Length: 110
Image (cartoon, rainbow, N blue to C red):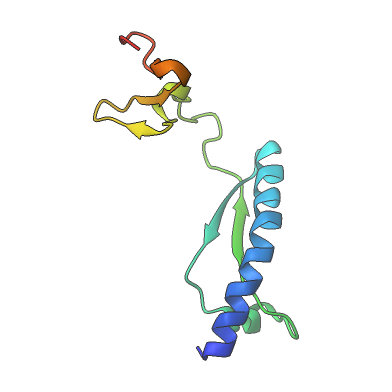
């Protein structure tokens, strides 16, 4: 891929990621799952789908899951969010004014 095309794609991607994510979220609200497909030959994709005069910068596949009722249980928020630090136990903590420390571990010392 020549450098001019690469630069154009890189600039265009920044303008298309947010609308693409809106599409992903809107589809999920209707039970339609999706995945971003990375590392594609954008020129070849454009030829295959018959796009002329436009540059294909993102590919998102949408579809219905085979087992929609078999979703994984949601994790507790304190197990997936880390603020300011991360320790080996997987517990995030944040320093608060006055030297107090808040820990996401509800059973810990804080």
